[in-house]
Length: 222
Image (cartoon, rainbow, N blue to C red; front, side, top):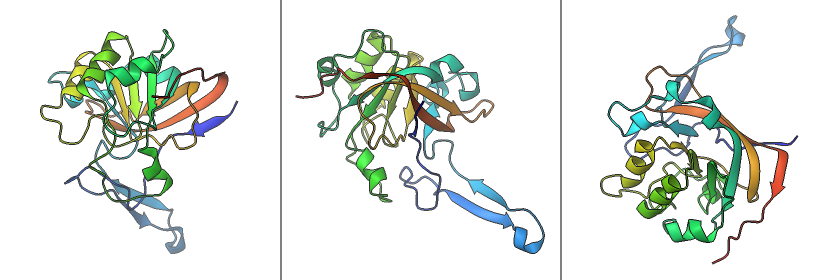
């Protein structure tokens, strides 16, 4: 088995959503002074690699601690969409010819270059899902969709239709992945968000395992 960590590290300088409080990690106790090394963290529930449950955009929706774990763990298909320069459309997804049994979909886009370069500035032009692509995901019965930037939705899209479409259909959203060097194909996904009671989101450690890996037969060209 080979394990690939697709999470971003929580560290000073990590890019966050505009107007969101930056991540702060402070060592408050030190072994050098006779204690233990202990740190305090201040961060948004949507900082770094994280899970969006329905409650994030749906009043009365399911919180993160009530998400079914069998949605967060299991076979996942990584789709290479690094050729897409703008929003990912339903046509892009249809052309990719995903396996019929795909239930967890991870979108590898040009966004991952930001993590490879350790960029700290927010990119308003990141690649996200178009509204028709979100509807396509729901129609295909996909239960989880992930992307390699801070949001699944293009920046400042009025009304947040992508989040509403996915979360109202109980599709779990996984954001801020680092898919650098991850080839298209099928893997085993293990994604466990922090168990925050009533949480509208939670940081997560997400990894891919190549046990049972199926070489990609996905068509990713235009």
